[in-house]
Amino acid sequence: MGNQSKKLAAVLAGVTAVILIGQVGSVRTYITEIRDGPGTQNAFDMFKEATGEDALLSAIRDKAAETRIAPVNARVDRVWKAIPGYNGMEIDVEATYRKALSGTLNTKIAYVYRQIQPEIQLRDLGAHPIYRGNASKPMVSFMINVAWGNEYIIPMLDTLDAEKVKATFFLDGSWLSKNVDLAKEIQKRGHELSNHAYSHPNMSRLSAERARLEISKTQDLLHTSLGVENRWFAPPSGDFNQKTVDIASSMGLQTVLWTVDTVDWRKPSPDAVVAKIAKNTEAGTLILMHPTASSSGALKGMIQSIRAKGLVLGTVTETLSSERVNASAVE
Image (cartoon, rainbow, N blue to C red; front, top):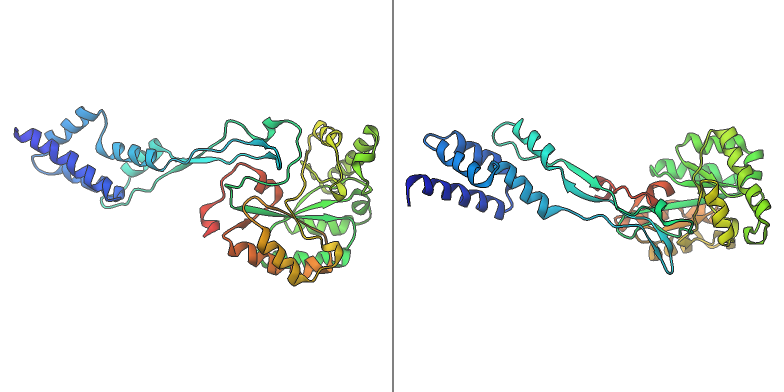
């Protein structure tokens, strides 16, 4: 074997060894030393000629292929109905390569990642109710339906503030018309506001005209009094039919229910509520509650039990989106 062939073999063997032991971060240093070392320029050029690219770029491509996470499509489940998709993730090879070249010797490769959207999104599924988020996304959400219970709202907001949690409050329109200032306080604390009909009816029993009016009156109130363009509709008492879902959809709203119910209107003890949530919550869970003594007293414990499972709390919009959860938020 000639000298140049031996040098090329050494380059290939060295790069392979570095990759195999999981030290891709040091490839740039290794290749730079080979490229710039005395009497090795021809070997480096031979590598580029043989592979069509330099070893750093090749190593990044290999790492990207090894670590790629495929996206998950939204789908309609027989039990849970519409389930949102979840973005995949991959290394942006070109951006990572450019960034690595601008570094100094011994700089560990800082990989640049990008999300991969599913081919089928929640919006592509048509008019279906939603009961939960994607099980691959480690996020859950509090759905707080408000038609009464004013005395517990501020204490619950204070707990959410202290724990740095944002929830989604579904407001009954008749309540909102009388409690705009309290609704503004919820909004000021950074929580999401959405639609819970106007007079807390059983939606499945209404005519199409009345059902549309129930949703539209609250939709208009949210806009005029709070500047909110809401996107979710939570049927009062969970009562709805396909007509309800279709009407909400025609108004730009998706119908959302819950995965786990605190049943706080039955006045369970806060400890019982916490135990129920700790047992039944998993990735994608939507947790229903109201401003009650039970949920107010249980709120901190619920948050702690959810976080103990490595789950992140977000709004309904965040939980049902296909966006990936920030990895640092899970740790």
